Length: 131
Image 1 (cartoon, helix red, strand yellow):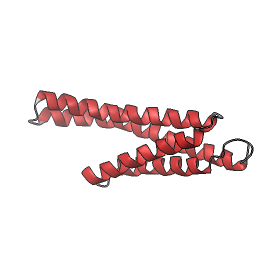
Image 2 (tube, rainbow, N blue to C red; image 1 turned 60 degrees about the horizontal axis):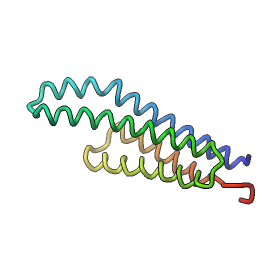
Image 3 (cartoon, rainbow, N blue to C red; image 1 turned 45 degrees about the vertical axis):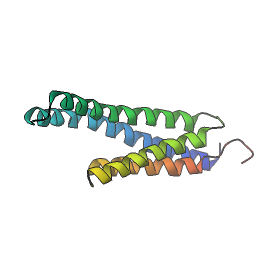
Image 4 (spheres, one colour; image 1 turned 90 degrees about the vertical axis):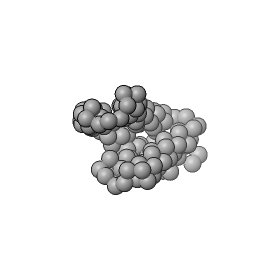
C-alpha cells in the first residue's frame, strides 16, 4: 500500500471518528436538552415528535455515513474513491444547510471538519496498483 493511500485512510478514519463523536453528542447529550425545551414549548405534540425524530435521525445519518466511508476506504474496490467523496459531499451539504438555517455553532464546526477530512482523504485515494 502506498503512503498516499495510508494518509487517505488516516484522514477518512479521522473524519469518521469526528462523525461518530458528533452523533454521540447529538443523541446522548443534546437530545435530553431538546426534549426538555420541546416539553416547555407550545408546539403541537405532532411537531414535537417530528423534531425529536429528526434530531435522532441526523445522528443515525452520521453513523451510517462514517461506516460507509470507513468500509470504502479500507476495502479494495473500484468505487472506493467515489464512495468516500460522496460521503464527504453529503456531510458538506449538511454543514452548509445547518449554517444557513441555524448559524455557526460547535456542531457545524465538527461536521465541517469531518467533511474536510473525508473529502481530502477521498481525493488522496488511489485505486489499483497502476495509479
